[in-house]
Amino acid sequence: MFEKLKGFVEKFSESRTFDPAVFNDPIAIRTSWSPLKKGGSNFKTHKLVQKDHHKLLFVPTIGAKLFCGIFVLFGLVFLLFEFFVGFSDPEATFLWSRGMVIVFSLVFVGVGVGSYYFKAVPRKFDKWSGLYWRGYKKPINMYDRSTGGQFARLGEIHAIQIIEEHISNNNGSYASYELNLVLNNGDRLNVIDHGNMRAVKDDAQTLSRFLNKPVWDATE
Image 1 (cartoon, rainbow, N blue to C red):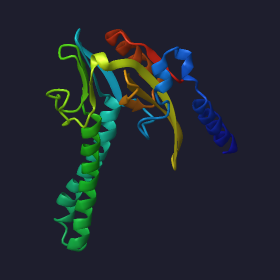
Image 2 (image 1 turned 90 degrees about the vertical axis):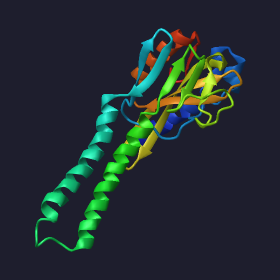
Image 3 (image 1 turned 30 degrees about the vertical axis):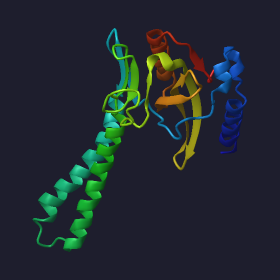
Image 4 (image 1 turned 180 degrees about the horizontal axis):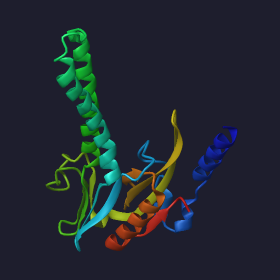
């Protein structure tokens, strides 16, 4: 236990002493190198897909779909069990107890559906429109706030940033890796955040070639 804690502190200290001057770029100095999005996943949740020569987008992986589907399936099993067994059994427990089972089941279904809804939010890089956006709705123009501000002109993207974040909870500790877009003014937009470092780095290189922008990797 002590060794794990020691290792975590050492890795945290390393991330705190990272020197962005290695990129020889004044914008890298102005950019924050702390995690932009708290939390993350210990498995690969998204993969980068090229639709054509002008469009890339991140979509949920099979693992992410299964993760969400388990919650939905678990809830539906309880609902079906209550429907076919609970209501047909004259010796079943009181109505309020049945209601609790139904509520419990619907909560699991809701968690699964809600989790997938947020994981499946499109993250698109479109050269035809010259935009990157994160949302189900494409922004009408640069003043459209319906996407919550999660969009930028491709020309505003200065670099692609990779940051490692160590997460600790009751189930243990793990590393999650952010892929962020660094804009010309030093602001950042988070694109993905999951635990497969190799996949994040590969996706960053694909984006780098697509956008002709450098990768700033703080994990090396």
